[in-house]
Amino acid sequence: MTLWNTLDASICTALTVEIDAITALSESSNAAPYLLLDQGEADFLPVEKCRLRPTPDSYFKDEPTRAPNLLPLKLPADHSILQEAFASATLTASQRLHAKKVSALLLVSCDIEALLGHFGVLSLQYDPTEGAESACVLRYQDPRVIQRVWPILSESQRRTWLGPIQHWYGATQPTGLIVAEAAAAPILWHATPALADVQPHSRVHHLLDSVQWRLAHSAPAENSFWQVVSLRSTSGHTAPYPSTGTLRSWLSEAASSGLGINDQTDWALCQWGVGQDYWESAMGRRQACAALDMLKKHAGLGFADAWHMAGLSL
Image: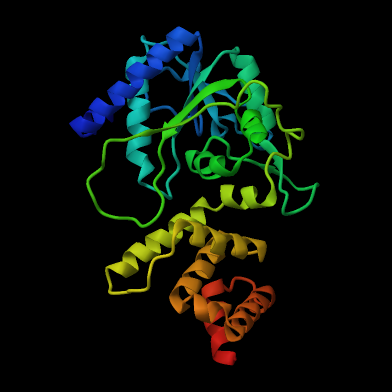
């Protein structure tokens, strides 16, 4: 059975409308369609593997199958491939901590070599929180990354991110409290470049500022937070849920304190658990500082344990 046939009929209908509109736009604008895949694994698609083209990602130079891959499409001939791709993207969107095999559908006016070259440049970024010498890979292909950071990019940053891409479509990624409910008809997330007179960002390898960088990399910690919260909500924990903006500010503060993903989640859970008044009080600040000091002295100690140990020692 194909992934498409496992979808609810209403979702198939909504996606069919989207696919037909994209096909028509591709034909009318003479823009070539490409699937952007997270890796070179396409067993879930009815396509020959030889059609895949790995992006020139320096991080994966010895493992090209693990790099993002492009799959050129011909519409409407490849209609069934696009159906399966959107079905996969829709089914995995709610699985917040799982890799997304299908990253995006792109409509592009340039040839594939130019598109591959663009992604080779975009993937290599410098972490603005660590200094100019810290080169890192930006997971531009991850729909959780681009959808989080896109609203706070400038028009010049957006133009640089998309480069020759005219349209970028992806399955909308959920945020906030995890609720058990029937899947609604999907709405594809859609990005287009800025107006033609907007100049690209002046530093292509320094595309994001520190706030944007932290937000782009905070999806794992944020989604872990909501998974824990959803479990606690069923056991009678009644603390008010933070807004998305509040949670992201907590995680940004944790990241700026040098904490990794798991400790960022613990930081936010501790802050949510004790309440904002205590956290911002003199006692709360002393406890947080003491917990951070413990982490420096004891390798392998998590922030949650350090927080509780610090509370006992104050």
